[in-house]
Length: 214
Image 1 (cartoon, rainbow, N blue to C red):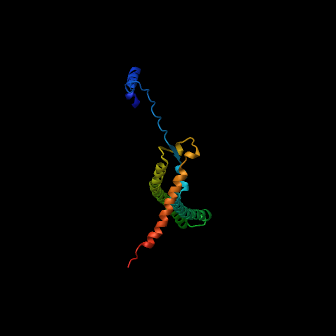
Image 2 (cartoon, helix red, strand yellow; image 1 turned 90 degrees about the vertical axis):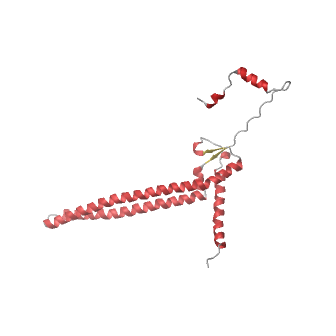
Image 3 (cartoon, rainbow, N blue to C red; image 1 turned 135 degrees about the horizontal axis):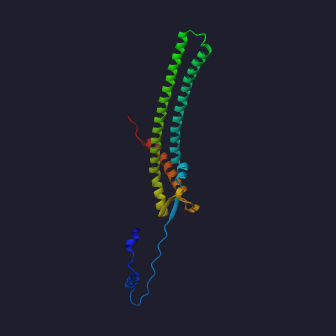
C-alpha cells in the first residue's frame, strides 16, 4: 500500500469544510505559493576518473599492478618454454637414437623424460597458483585505490553541490539524456585538480621549512 494512502481525505465534504475553516469572513482565499523546482545536475564519474589528476594518478598505480602481473606471467611462460624444450629434446633423441641406444641408455632417457615432464607439470601448477595470488592481491589493491579515490573526490563533489545549490545530483550512467549545462563534471575536475596542485606545492614548502636534525 502506498504510504500516502494513510493521509487521504475521507471525502469531498471534509475537504470543503477544511478549506472554509481557513478563510476569514469577507476575505478571498489566497493561492498557495508554487513550490520551487529542484536544482538538478549530472555528474560523469567516468570522466572525472579519467581526466582528473587524482584519477590519472590512481590509473597509473593500476597500470603498475597490471604490468607486475604481466611481467610475472611472461617470466613464467619463458621458464615453461625451457622445460618443454628440454622434454622435446629428450623425446627427439629417443626417436632418432632409439634403435642404436643400449637398453640401459634408452631407459635412462625415458626416465629423464618422465622427470622433466613431472617438473613441467609441477611448474605449471605452481605458476598458476602464483599468478592467481598476484591477481587477488592486485584486485584487493585496486579496490583500495578505488575507495581512496572516492573518498578524496567526494569533498569536491559536495563543494560543487553546495556552491550551485544542487538539490539532486544524478549519475550520468543512469541518465538517458541531459543538456550540457546540467553537467558539472568539469567543475568537479577543476576543483579537484586545483586541490591536488595546491597539495603538491605545499609539500616542498613544508619540507624546506622543517628544521634540520642536529
